[in-house]
Image (cartoon, rainbow, N blue to C red; front, top):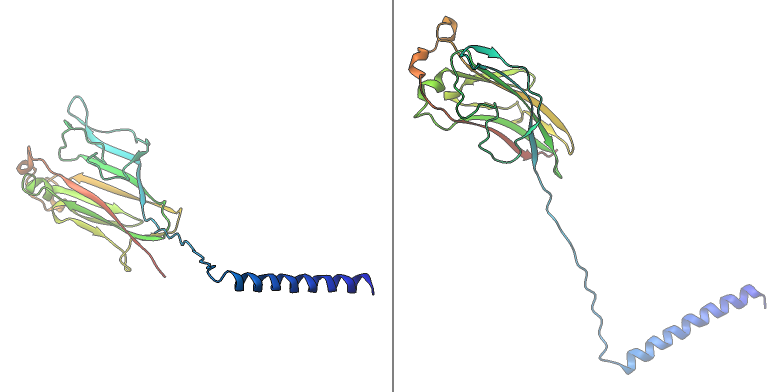
Length: 215
């Protein structure tokens, strides 16, 4: 018998012996049981956006009361979490007048587990104490093209599919929000006398919505 044949014989014998042992165990210990537990770990994906201001330009009053355009501020400021911080960098005691203008360039990024579509809203939250001012503040959202309205009317910026755009994981996009206190002496603006807005206070929200996008 060759070595190869002998090896095969030994392998078969080993299997037969092993099977015999299993049979003996099965007969002798009828109470043996076997249970297999398979743990399945499931975790829901996360949808979250990062929203930062990357540039800010302001035409506002200087210390002497003159309207001046300040140098562009390129400090990156994070607005990812709900906040009362002013996206236009308007200080608590800073006043606005006809001709004041603020433009904030925002960066939206997808740092979540799913692709999402997003759209933008300007929501006036304080029409009572700032009714006249809300009618004289023009807000423009530029996402590649301009969409404008008065703050009083609110503004929703969406595309044909309901989104401004869609962002895959790790992708980012930019848009600019500009607010201008229009001058009522310029006839084509067709607004009420600026004097009606003197001393008024106004609050409005910049809201960025995101929803999971699918094919």
